Amino acid sequence: MRDEKTMEKKKRIACSIFLNAAGIIIYATGINSFASPNEIAPGGASGLAILINHMAGFPIGLFVFLFNIPFLWVIIWKKIFPTVFVWSTLVSTAGLSVITDMMSALHFPVYEGNPLLASMFSGVMLGTGLALVHLGHSNTGGISLAGLILQKCSPQFHVGSVISVLNFGVVVASVFVYRSIDSLLYAVVTVYISGIFMDQILEGAETKNLLIVIAQSTDKVRQVFLNERAGITVLKGEGGYSSERQRVVMCVTGKKESEKLQEKIRRADDEALVIVTEAQRVTGKKFARLM
Image (cartoon, rainbow, N blue to C red; front, side):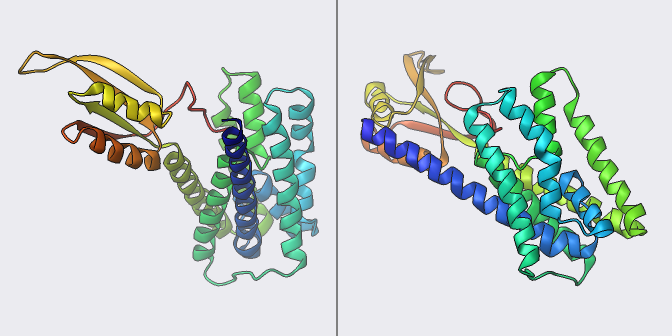
């Protein structure tokens, strides 16, 4: 039992490291290969860094890290977040800064073709990168981290509105820096697509299956769930036509686990009625919110 828990913990840590690394690389590629070369400042600390880089040649990654120092100091010393999240965020923020400037120094391939395509692919990569980092229970810092801090300290504060205004301010500033309305329009496209991809990936990761099982041999079905260590709730039901009392087993689980459970239920009772529906958002108990 102890070995299994150790293995599961190692798998979770390895998965978190992989998601963070992949997210950081994809995000940095979106900045270096698509956004910055095509004069697109997609809001946030990265967008501001792109503008500063254009005006003064200051390294994008270094600026992002310096921008994040006050927020990192707050989450380290104020201890308002779990320790794992704090140190993971510190590593992700530093990693993003280093990889972004490293790509620039190594003259990573850039796309300088159609600006609309650049804005679209930049949005795809930024949204995907951020989503993967969030799935790895971390954060890349910047305005989103500032929003998390505000939300934690003042729950009644309209954090989303403040973040939107700050991001919009960076996007609008690109008009004056690049002296082109096109830069603003392409940045809007990038932000919009980035938001769509991030939401879709995070919602897909949170999606669970709800299994409702009605069977004559409820004890056998119940044992299937218990053997798989799946949390269940047994409800008291009554047949609509027969008025016979029966028990209904309900379980929320991941999609892969759902397939396995359905197969084992069929083996235990091939006449059991199994209803499977998608539960888009599940919170509480062992189902934690993403940071």
